Length: 208
Ligand SMILES: C[S@@+](CC[C@H](N)C(=O)[O-])C[C@H]1O[C@@H](n2cnc3c(N)ncnc32)[C@H](O)[C@@H]1O
Image (cartoon, rainbow, N blue to C red; front, side, top):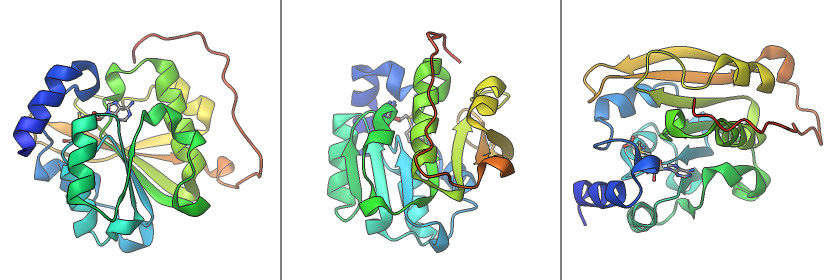
C-alpha cells in the first residue's frame, strides 16, 4: 500500500488519533530532527505514521536498530515493520510508554513526537510526557511539532513535570505551517533520582 493510501485509510478509521490530512512534509521532518545526531541514539519516535520523521532520523545517522517506533494505528505499524525490519516497532498507545522496557533498559537521547497532543485529553498528555522522560537521559530532549501558535503542552503541565519548552524552528512550507518545540527537564530536575516517580491525582480531562 502507498503512503497516501495508508494515511487516508488510517484517517478514516481513527480521525482523532491521526488528526492531520496528510503526512508531514520533508521540511518539517528536517526541522524536527535538526538537533539529532548519532550521539542521540537510541531514539524513540511517537506516532511515526508513514515514517516521514523516521526517514529523517535515519538520514541523521541514527542506526535503524537504535530506533523504537511507537505507533497505535495497525496499518501504520505493519507498514513501518516491513520497511524498517531492524527497528523496534511497538504497536501500542503511547500513554503506556512508562510501563515498557526499551533497548534493554538503556536510556535514550531523544524522543521525537508526531502525536496530535492538541487533540488528546490532559491526562493522556501528562502520561505521555511522564513516560517519555522516564526513558530519557538526564540531558535528553523531547521534540514536538504543532500547527498552533504556541507550545501544545500548556505551561501548568510543564511546570508540574519540571520541564521547559523552547521553540527551535518550524516549517512554513508544511501544510499547514508548523512549529517545532524542544522540551527538556529544567536544570534542577536533571539529576536522576533512583526510584523517583511522579503521581498525578488529576480528574481533569479537558483537551489542551
Ligand atoms: C498527525 S499523525 C503524524 C504522523 C507522522 N509523524 C507525520 O508527521 O506525518 C499522528 C500519528 O500519531 C499516531 N498516534 C496518535 N495517537 C497515538 C497514541 N496515543 N499512541 C501511539 N500513536 C498514536 C497516529 O496513528 C498517527 O500515526
